[in-house]
Amino acid sequence: MNTGFDLRMKRSGQEWAAIRDSILVMFAVFCVSVQNAVVTLSEGSQVALSASYPFIAVSVALFVGGIVYFIRHRAIHMQKKLEDSHEFLSTMMDSIPTPIFVKNSKHQWIAGNKAFWRLLGKPPEMMRGKSDYDVFPKEQADIFWEMDEKVLMSQEMSVNVELLRSPEGEDRLISTKKVSIKLENGEPGLVGIIEDITDIRRNQEELKAHRDNLQQMVELQTRDIVAAKEKAEASNQAKSEFLSNMSHELRTPMHAILNYSQLGRKRLGAEGDGTLSKYLHNIEISGNRLLGLLNNLLDLSKLEAGKLTLHLKPGNLHHTLEQSLIELDSLLDEKGLKFEIKNEVLAERAVAVYDHKRMVQVFVNMISNAIKFASEQSTITLQYSMGTITEGEKAGSKALQCSIHNSGVSIPDHELLNIFEKFTQSTATKTGAGGTGLGLSICREILAAQAGVIWAERGVENGARFHFMLPCGQPDDHEQVVTV
Ligand SMILES: Nc1ncnc2c1ncn2[C@@H]1O[C@H](COP(=O)(O)OP(=O)(O)O)[C@@H](O)[C@H]1O
Ligand SMILES: [Mg+2]
Image (cartoon, rainbow, N blue to C red; front, side, top):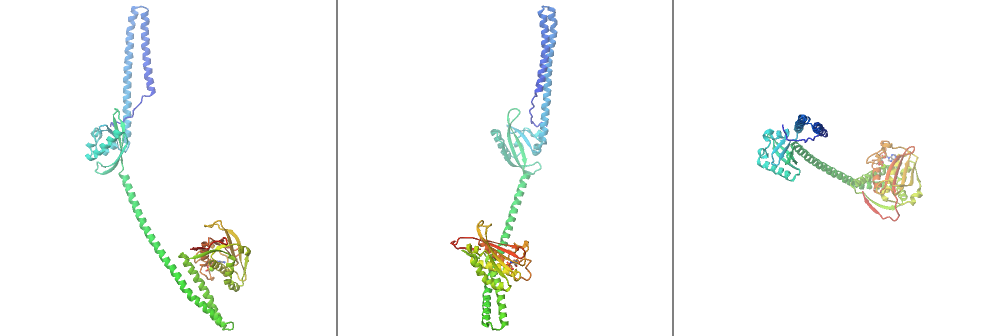
């Protein structure tokens, strides 16, 4: 099939050299023949002259014949090469699955590859020389014609996407690229390359539908999650409110119970009924424990509701410790424990910024823990030192550090962080030690609200070491109110 596609062949340098050499050889033969004739003429011999003419004639005939033969041979050879190159181009174009066609300036198809004729559904012999109006409905042919015209005139590439009905009656979406070219005869023409984008578009649309669907699903799920979160927050809020109310409600009668038992013991006096006095004392001990628990629950509910307010003022932490110890003296005595303070002078000089009432709470919880877990008759040590805050907004600030050490039970290394979580107790103390596991988590929140830190370590030999740090300040720093 003649596609009309042309790969222009160039004569190689070797071919030109062969032609030139052949002409030179034939010209040499001619010159030798002519020279013989001239030599004969110069001798003035009439016979010798006439005897060389046939030879010259034969030489000229041979020369002309040779040239004619050579030109003919070259022409056949070139024709063959041209046909070969056409054949090669046709095969190459036909093997391309993309429909490709060539039109002349009259918008007529003059060449096309197999894929193109297949797309038209007509053989090339029928379609060559025909235009879009012979194949497509007028409205569509108008569009193609206009597009061709634009390319032929402007010589710019154009791309058009349109719907085409295939010979099988299927609507296909095609994108046609048209580029202007110069034809073999020098006239303007164009090459069209057609791409069937039906599947690509379909895939894109499917992808978009999937994406939309996915987005819708995510939106629905997000709505569910938000609703569940709001519900959980509402119930958490309700729980905190309940805890707060209950703690309040329980604290009031608890205070009354404690006051009346103290009053009863006072009335009985030293000589009163010993057993009754013991009963009242037991009521007081249990009542105090219950009150401690209620206070912790109340703090927890305040923390969860973000309603724990602290008043931060510069102060002397050692004085706060001394006030806390008043509450703890009887507990220390009960177990025969000694309480040793190291570096007191440092603490008296240092100014820390903190909420006095809340730090009493921290000291009481930490020292009462130490008392609870220390071995009988041992010594609890509290040591002051200077440190530096390493995390948070006050990172790098100078701080007063307080370390409390007691002998006795050691907390396993992997639990040293956990014990600061709500309702968490160490496995080393869980059995029979009582408590709720709330104190340390409240202490951690209180210290964090004051830009401080708290942590635990195992004792050097046994027991536990608890440390906390509070940033230092100036005596004239203003009071700050923070709510956590
Ligand atoms: N000084 C200590 N020695 C050993 N274990 C301690 C000490 N202080 C705290 N713990 C451990 O940390 C847990 C949590 O303490 P805390 O939060 O104050 O709660 P509670 O005292 O109500 O148990 C304690 O139950 C105990 O297991
Ligand atoms: Mg405690």
